[in-house]
Length: 518
Image (cartoon, rainbow, N blue to C red; front, side, top):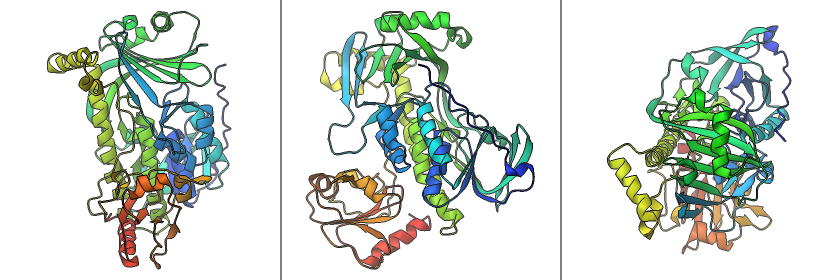
């Protein structure tokens, strides 16, 4: 059954009949990133207005591969369980050269994590769950059929003009979040340009509905017999939907290739029969680009409006949720007057760093899939030829390095280097079972002092979590050490760690974080 795109109700906004009070935050775009941002701000007590020019969730599967960290973020927002229950869980990927398997990987070989390595779930389901949560939240004003047509800002705030079926009105806010996608109208209104690389390559995406008994794995082919000389990717989704990506080449005509009479014969070669129906198709080009700065005065760019990458590696939607993770607690503190605006510079620094890491990995994958003539092609062809015969070449086969959260550089952070590197400053705190609960759930979304094997120093003013030292806690946080203190930020990133520390040292680090110095 095709997904039922039930329209959201349009309600005439109060701004049509008189000026509205200034809002703390206006979010432009009700996709996964915009809705997640509204829910994350609400968790920290900050109200927002979310504007979207449409009144349905996204058409087509679009982003489908949600990584473990994204699932942890979605879980914190109240929709993680629904995503895992509906989605197709997977952790194994297989790469083929022609008909031979040359490489495979297992993304989560160890047990003891609440969330799986990856879940395949169409973007429209994620938006559906997030929108339901947002509509139920009294701090979120979700407005459909509200299209932003202009934006202006001063040092003190920002203003957007909004067009509705009933007329236009103005909204003022302390901050505007541009969550309006890769073609961001707000980015264009401000005259901002992406920096980076556009690759001369095109791929076809086809979602097909068919009955099939196929494993829940990621399959990627180089030069398969069914698509000679090119690349192909297959993912299983819920509702008997399968995602197929087929490399077309730069010389292909997008208008011709999007026609069903061109697509269906290609899909027949992939699956070996005609017992399927087309659900959604699209043609895309590879881009690895970003804004120089994500914070532009009172307008902050989040998700695809700030950065775009080629889709192999699932770093687009996942990267957008990591933006939300890094921004929400900081922006809430700023608009509530608990922290200076300088705190937002840390969002800019950390997420441009994360974006550069995603772009680097995506660009390397793209060059391996679509090598230029000369050294790039010689290298790619040699690796594929060797991968059939020798072990050392197999990890060099690059069909997309899959999304993992980056480790932010925090060079000034206190660090007890004898503790496990997995839990070093700048890394997301690794999950672990806690009896009937999980560590990340227990951490929540506030600044926490994690005390292991010792009592926490008194006088820090922080909530203290002192779990039992389970084997997973020992392995991931202590190693050979007997004790440790971990300072964990509201986004569950480790800010500092000590084997022992006085309250003054912990408090000094907390102050530096809130002042935007750490």
